[in-house]
Image (cartoon, rainbow, N blue to C red; front, side, top):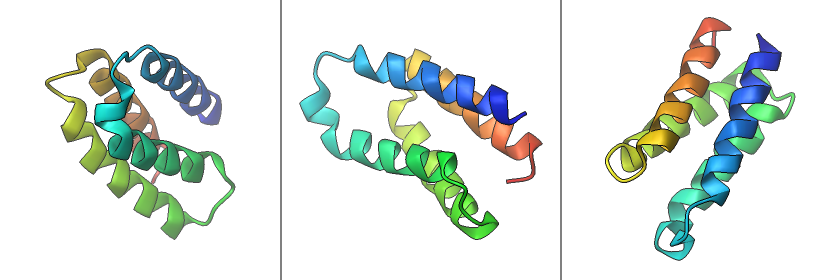
Length: 85
């Protein structure tokens, strides 16, 4: 399951790198990268839950403008839910 999460995170980072107008989303990118970094760390369950909550908020910001990123974020969140986070 952790491997699936890592794969989804890698795909997500690749899609984020494709966005041309990254400056307009700078705050969202920073928040997203911070949340992703927290998920990849061997943090305790509480920190991972906080990161998951942050990720949920960020997902809504990408839903309309970036549907591929939205789908990948949802996959990451489903994987987290599957592993109990």
